[in-house]
Length: 81
Image (cartoon, rainbow, N blue to C red; front, side):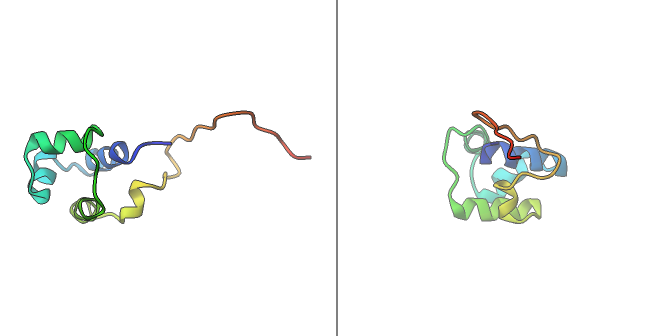
C-alpha cells in the first residue's frame, strides 16, 4: 500500500501544484514541506485537511487507492472453488 506522503506527492504532481505553494499554505518552510513530503515528519490531520483543500481533493483520497494505482498483496493467494 502506498504511504500517505507518497500519495500526496502523486496528487500534487498530477494537479501541477508546486511544493512552494503547499509550504506557503501550511505556513512552513520549503524544507519543512520537504520533510513532510518524504515521510521524515508526521502529517497531522489539520495539515492533511489544509493540503486537501489546496489540492482540491477529498482527504480520503490520500488513503484510498484509485483504480489506476497499483496494489500489492503479501502472502499466498487462495482461490475458492
